Length: 227
Ligand SMILES: *Cc1c(COP(=O)(O)O)cnc(C)c1O
Image 1 (cartoon, rainbow, N blue to C red):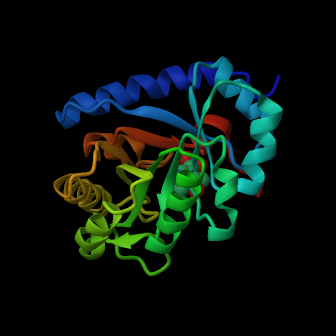
Image 2 (cartoon, rainbow, N blue to C red):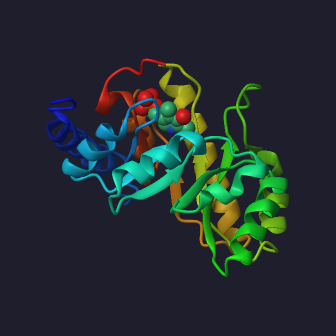
């Protein structure tokens, strides 16, 4: 059976999350969002069997068939860049974690309003200043936060960030605490921004110490990706 020991891994990660939250002393609790990209619907089923309730994909084209194949009451999160002409594929997603521009915000806002719905989103922030990373710069967040209050069919629930690929703990902590400050900026603008989606397989414990409420884990749960 593929992903045979997944339940054990989920239990172990769960313990590490709890311990990291205690060390951090911030009163946060982090949920696991299982990142199933490049894996098949069998990974989605295995995650569900292991007690996972949230799964994420970074491309809608890959997510939608898996969502249909799995037919499970999971919460789906989109964590990769979404092109504006693909917003209709958000149907079935619980949350767009990768809101990376105001133009995309407009497109999603229109999509949600047309359906008489409200879409939960996280604002993707580039907290490390790396040129290659998408999302809003921290310095641009106050202005974006104000502009987003006018997009009435979006509910801005917090921020999502990706740290640089490094083992340098100072760099990781600086990135995560900048994202946390970014979330405060959204809250100050009146958004119900309580979620901090940060931490991946290699840095999730530090992210939780820094206040993460959601860690996005692929490799540590499912093994290395083939593509
Ligand atoms: C792939 C991906 C992850 C998971 O990464 P792992 O290192 O495999 O845990 C998390 N977040 C985003 C945005 C991703 O694209």
